[in-house]
Length: 499
Image (cartoon, rainbow, N blue to C red):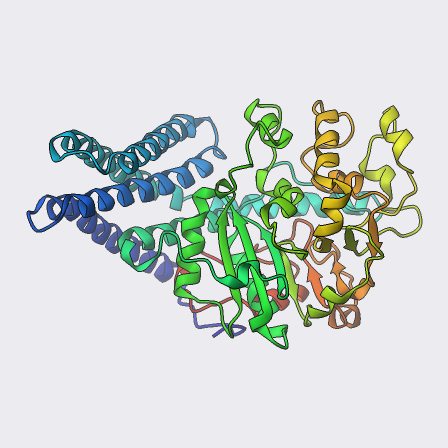
């Protein structure tokens, strides 16, 4: 049950049980997929339905291999060839899926060569994924050790700097268990493709400005599920709350499987979107996309999507942005009634004394920074932000953000791996401070936050490197997050989450 500590067998038995389930899953998957071509070739299946089934298989395998490619790129040189194979085959399958979609009206004779090519590529993808699966699963202990080493390094750096916030860890921030969870969810979709809608019908609530709308940008399905579960339980009327979850295309199927198996409770509304669904997000419009495609940026694209909220949701007037590492403890409906005094952004400030002011985040040796900003201005933090989208459109904040991104193409104004400085610049003079009880931060790096402050917070934020889904999380805070985890979801045990 959520919030409890279920019985767990010993480590060897868990490993054997996980291995057995994996083999059974692969055997079932191979049977289902290998039988699909035979069923498709039977006379009882119509050509359009056969083509649709092949197209689904191609698209699903493309998603699986794209996710494997994302993880393979994080490994050392030994995995470079494997990463290229995954990426190339995933691209081929995606292109093939598009060709299948565009040629559905062709006569039977013209379709057969394309169907044959699709079946051969799908077979190759299935074999490649099955052969590589064991190698990915054996990395879990290595990743946990890596997480521990990085966390200890962060603690040492914090002590040397007398309590100041430590720098971000340079290595990858997504642990192996999260990749494993995404893979398991994708495999569940492959095993039962008809059980999960490719494009569910949109709810009228998604565009109703009279409801309470939240935006979450994340690739972490487990973390997002906790944010939504905690906010739902804290809400006085959950049916008035709408969550818009924007993720990368490769992770969208995993999100759909999770929320299909665990539908949002109490009438809350959840919209799952891939950022590729927004046609305006491309290199010709966004300098973020242009710089990434040109190889000038190695950043998490999903972090920068927050600067396009008014374009993504044109029917909405106010949106609350939540980070995926927060837990909601109180009803947030009152945020829609906070007077922002005509400003665009409502946020909790985090400065104290001379700390956490603009001089920490921006390079004041640059003339444009000195001319436009005060080094002593108080910095605020992402985590809980109230955005007036009408004021945003009025003041052209997205266009201003684009100007700063162009000026920072060489990384001279701020560290481009951090999204906060871009927000501090874009909303400078346009931010209304919120009461600090709305957003208590630091549970991912500060072990000394008082229980009274935590209990009084509407939202608690695990910003920092000791994320609550990692083994290195602070023990005194971890239960605040794990009590909202759906521990009955079987994939969590298979993926070695220490909950």
